[in-house]
Image 1 (tube, each protein chain N blue to C red):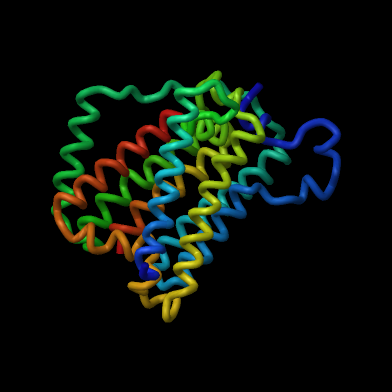
Image 2 (cartoon, rainbow over the protein chains, first blue to last red; image 1 turned 90 degrees about the vertical axis):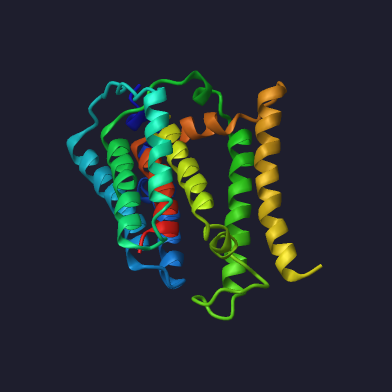
Amino acid sequence: MDEDTRAAPRGRLANIPLLRALPDPVVIILVLAGFFDMISGNPVIHGVVLFAAAGAIVGDAIARRGAGQQPRKPTARPRTSLYVVGIMIGYAMVVGEFSRYSWPASIAVAIPAVGAVAYAWRTSPPRRPEAEQVGVFGAAVWGSVFVALGVWELAALLMQPTLIIESYAHPTISAVMDPVLVSHAARAVFLLLWLAVGWYLVDR
Amino acid sequence: MSSHTITVAGYLLVVAAVAALQVVALTHRTSIPTLGAVLSRLMRSRSGRVGVLAGWAWIGLHFFVR
């Protein structure tokens, strides 16, 4: 069965109006993240990216409901090679030289970020047997860890003097990372990890 | 122990929990899946794929883009 049809409510559940009207949990998470990002004084574009992704998902769901669901074949995935690893390392070393929030850094980071999201939008994942074995308990265990992280981060944000002034006593993850990312080496390592995680996710 | 230490310890605890769950999933016969399996499951739908990649993209933007 196509991955997009698997995501939709099936059988009798699909006929319950309330369930059909419930927003996708991914959309709720993106909207909440975008909201808290915006009220915490970050550049508007950061929140806009999350809202745009949420809006695109909703728009796509509405369009599919009208047009019907077409089966899609899994897309061939990019292969990891020494060539790719070399490009990632080179990218991290070069972009790590740029000051954070400078235009060169902004453009260099935005390109793979936008490219990966666009790629995710256009492609279908391969069948992975391990994905079929994820039960409710296992998903709940992992979900609870990330919810705990979100709650802890939110608590730190709300315990700042104001939402846009960082607190040493209650640092958010950003506040913890700021002094770390001062050095070129740390920025290069961070960017390399970020890029590697993105590559891994694109391959999921 | 200061509030700063407690807050940072909370983040480290989450990192440790992720590592511990991954080790348990890889080394024991348990109903806890690996993080990779959970991500694969989550990313089977278009909304899941776009949501996860948007979250990843946001991390890069948050720390580097003006």
